Amino acid sequence: MSEQTDRQPPTSRWLSALLVLGLCLVFFIQVKDILTPFIVGALIAYLGDPLVDRLESRGLSRTGSVTLVFALLISLLTVIVAVVGPILIQQLSELAAAIPDAYRWLSEEAVPWLQLRLNLSPVSLPNIDWQTSLSEHWQSVGQMTGGVVQRVTTSSLALIATLLNLALIPVVAFYLMRDWDIMMAGLLRLVPRVWAGTVADSVSEAHGVLEAFLRGQLVVMAAQALMYSFGLWLVGLNYAVVLGLL
Image 1 (cartoon, rainbow, N blue to C red):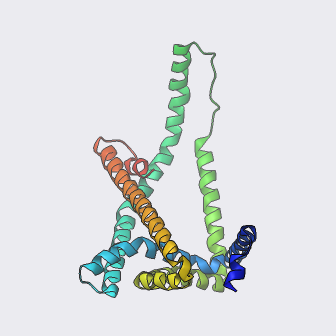
Image 2 (image 1 turned 30 degrees about the vertical axis):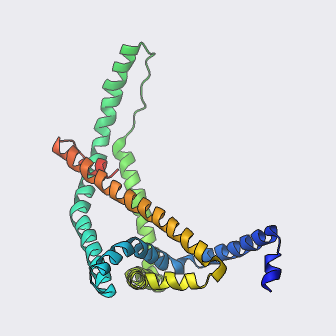
Image 3 (image 1 turned 90 degrees about the vertical axis):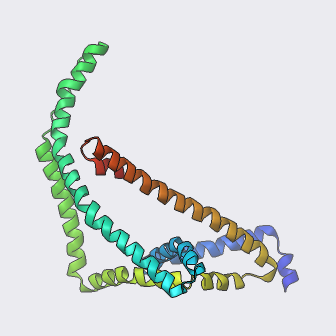
């Protein structure tokens, strides 16, 4: 049987692999709502597994290491929501309120100055009723948000499903993070022995590159957001947190 498989043309192998991949993709699309908590939980577990391994190498148990990592993540998320959230909302409101004055300065001072300096033909910006425009946009956002909330809350099954999905994410992430190494070893045992070494080396190399990339990007993003926000706030610039996060 193995000899017949080895004699199978490469084109047929690729077609079979693409067919299986397409069927899996269609299946995942059909059950995406069910798989969403598991995908998010798997991503959290993947990002937290290196830290868990380091804590485990220092003598902590696997469950204790996962618990400590989860406590750190929840504490960090709580601090961000409690400290940054209100400041961000306040600065966004102030920014929305300052848009009319900024547009008025642009149309009445900046554009005429540029036209005078560069000898351009006079062009006036259109007059915009910013108060009405902003209020309409806020109303549309509120109506859209209210409609989504209403659709979710009017159906008890949809509300229960949403709450269960949200509650399922940390549970899935916890157990996936705890058994991550066991699952990876189990998946590797499914690979034929002939390919086991090559697959293990390739997966290990890809994992190292992807892990370093994601960790580096997250560290750079967090460091830049912190430095920009603090630096802009230090020099007295308005909307420092908004600009720093952007």
